[in-house]
Amino acid sequence: MNEFTAIAARRHAAAEDAALRAALHRFVQGRLRDRDEGEDIVQETYVRLYDYRRTKGVADVGAFCFAVARNLVFDHFRRRQAMPASTELAEDIVCPLPRAEEVLDYRQRVDILVAALKVMPTLRREVFLRRRLDGIACATIAQDLDMSLAAVEKHCTRAVADLRAALERRGLPAGAAR
Image (cartoon, rainbow, N blue to C red; front, side, top):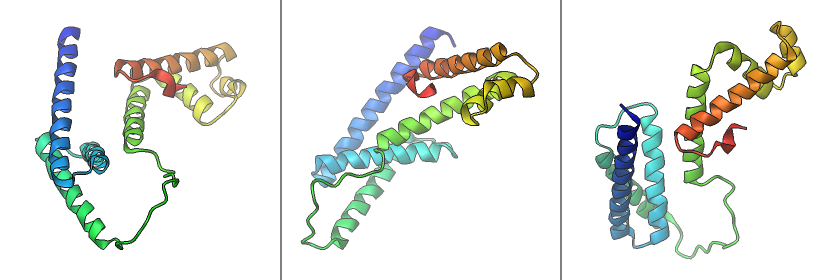
């Protein structure tokens, strides 16, 4: 597949995703009549789709998303019926958990970085993991692997460049690879 067809395929997939998202919004809004709750349900639908796809294939993404959204709408109404009628919530309570978009973005980045580490040359990966994840000093790594200090630093620099390039190829900002 050449670069032009790859770009065209990504644009087509983005257009299909936008159309599915709009259809899900209409579907959920027609049942809830609450824009904020509807957006939350659509986001949760995408999070569940992503989680499911990590272990299994999805033949019809649209059907899967609509089934999940329908179940989430039902769950929403069940929770509302179970809540006491006079419960007032404070407006200044902030949820400490990340938003669904942030979780999804984080998981995508981790998958991309893990794949990039797997295809990285063995010595470069070993040096990078020891230095950046284990926090071992460059001098210690150089001594353990019988290489110069400059070679250790170059391997780390090239590994970071490889990880940034992997993120950029997927259209994500490279800030997370630092």
